[in-house]
Length: 65
Image 1 (cartoon, one colour):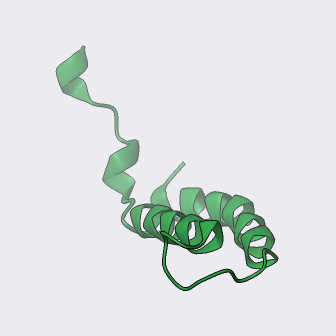
Image 2 (cartoon, rainbow, N blue to C red):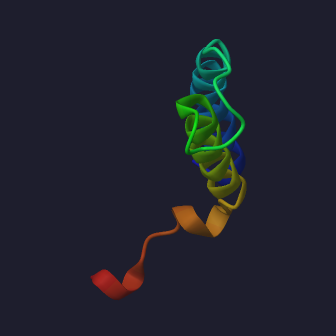
């Protein structure tokens, strides 16, 4: 697997999660007021981490052998 394949596969999983979160009612515009905002912020962090995945992340770590 390479980075692009990983990103494509994980987006298929994350997009429905985002859709489900967006179905929640709005109950504030800050994380302290709304679980919806908290979940969207966490999902955004995950998307950012996924975006940073590179092909080198799939290479074996030779230092642990």
